[in-house]
Amino acid sequence: MKEIRFGTDGWRAEIARDFTFENVEIVAQAIADYFNKQTDKQKGRRIVIGYDTRFLSKEFAQTVSRVLLANGIEVLMSASSCPTPALSFTIVRSKARGGVMITASHNPFYFNGIKIKGDFGGSVDTEVTKQIEGLLGKNKPKKLTESKVREYADLKIKNFLPAYKRFVSSYVDFNLIRSSRKRWRILVDSMFGTGNGIIEELLTPAGIKVETIRREANPAFPGINPEPIPANLKQTIDLVKRGGYDLAVITDGDADRIGALRPDGKFITPSLILSLILLHFLRHRRWKGGVVKTISSSSLIEKITQRYNLNLYETPIGFKHIATLMRKEDILIGGEESGGIGYKNYLFERDGILSALLLIEMLCAEKKGVIEVIKEIEKEFGRFRYARIDIFYPQDKKQILINRLKTISFQELLGKKVREVKRYDGVKIICEDDSWLLLRFSGTEPILRIYAEASSEREAREMLRKGKEMVYRI
Image (cartoon, rainbow, N blue to C red; front, side, top):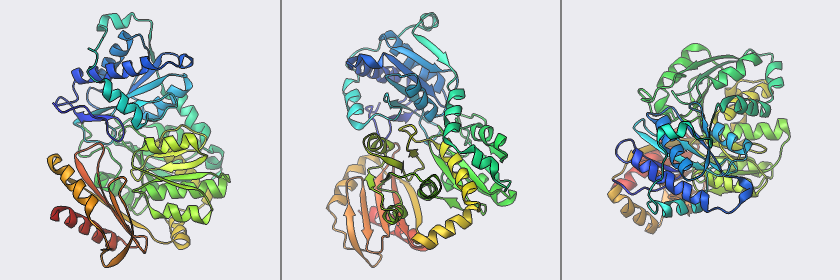
């Protein structure tokens, strides 16, 4: 059995190999010990528990609840699978001390995981997860029997979705959407996850024609990983090309991330989605505030903040870093390259469902198709072409590569002079023309991610090839 370690967003492991009921009990006990050590009595003793559509997620959630209840913690548990942002909203609404979400997000079907949320609804920071790691195995897990749980007054079961849907709807300008003269046709791909049917339910009364695919819950996620990237969207791309849709929006396994496709089937990167919504906030809602991007996000975001004289913050990958800044600073929008985006006057959490609705609100405000809007952005701010590959890398050689990359002096890349090298989260090599290459190990899977951005797709792919060559040479 591997040592239990928390990564970019909680603990994830393979079901039955490391993610077992025994280990979940160990983690749940550490979570209980952590929350019981907190002295702020104003926050009460309630923990909210949710779960996704993965294999045994409900049963793992019940296991966590039995351990928490045995430790004197009140539990509010979702009556069914739910999006992670629905859990986050319920934490804030119920004034709970925190929350636990059973999900492995976008990982392959044979993974499951635990995300730990603070009283503000977002993921707890690294300092908290380190404390919880330090409590693992310190105390033998307490747990109630199943028959005892049913008669326990400290357990409440509730449907989180109705209140969450009302909350999301209150953020979106549905009057603008309803007043649109164009009859928009939208394809939604729920990727067999917890977003199933929610976007369609909210948009249809506003006059939008919506069709949803892969909306049924399926723990096997047949044929895909529930991550909204082109490799997992072949069926969706084919449908968009054939079906005459104005836009396709995709949510991941726990619906906190977004992906999107143009009418011609081309992928709209999450950084471009963030940029589209950012410009919509600035130009139509007349909102202001800072912007947060991660090290792997597009330089386009930087160009927009420069044009509008906005403060720009850059963080390591992981939305918890963005959420920490959003709690401290006046942040308008913050997002990751992977599709997690958070917003001002909302939760300190990413929300793929809200992001999809805001993208459609933006189109209604612009009164133009998404391809035309993107062309206008490129004309104003320049062309940015992004690419990424994931490669399996032996874990026993991981540290060797990390140490080697730290010592290399990068002077040029593809014949271009290197302007800057960032090493605080992987290694990012930035050239004088703003093109860049990033090599970084995933915090949730045993893979190395290689990212690149340039002014053309050909050059971005060439950078990926160079990065891969660099790795294998080491």
